[in-house]
Image (cartoon, rainbow, N blue to C red; front, top):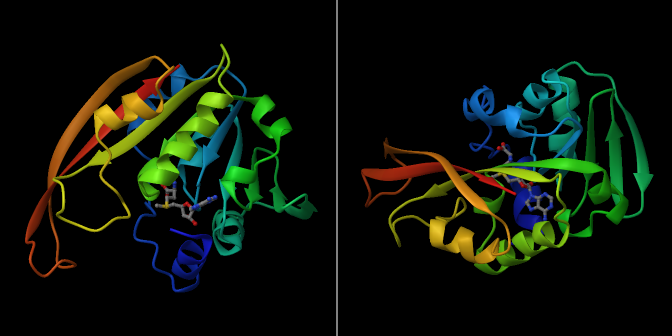
Length: 212
Ligand SMILES: C[S@@+](CC[C@H](N)C(=O)[O-])C[C@H]1O[C@@H](n2cnc3c(N)ncnc32)[C@H](O)[C@@H]1O
């Protein structure tokens, strides 16, 4: 899954993953984050960033698509500045800063500033080999104050082609190995789909984890 795949998706307006409301798990669990900056990898133009900002956090999103970054500020009527920093374009506002570029190239000083990570549809957006690299990046930057709220999906094997990819709890335990992993909640919903001609419905399990 290369950068072009996602950049094209945004260009074509194929962003069904985007939610018009913030994720309900945030109301229950965002208080787990220590005060300070929350990193939102692969953030798209998620409204969850606004929720985190409303709870007093400074938010740092990382997103490949410049369309997503610009739309986030424009659609939410937030004034921002734009500047080039290393391999990124940085969009800055009072409470939310978006680093437009590749998550895997995020400068070290940004990692050092964060006390929380929020992942909804980020890990599951990546194929297996990239999920390992993604988790390794987070594990490499772990520190006592860092907590990760992870919202992951699982569905029966070989039913649909990702993304989103199905990620099992076993895989999460394996790739985030050294971290302490707590399962906060898990809900299974039957989704009816017209996208997959052979499949009428699919059981999608969404699980929320807290990793420290
Ligand atoms: C499935 S979407 C989820 C977006 C957001 N988390 C949400 O809940 O709406 C995955 C996003 O990750 C972005 N992305 C994929 N690979 C990336 C990378 N290596 N670095 C930064 N962003 C990336 C894509 O452009 C896309 O917007």
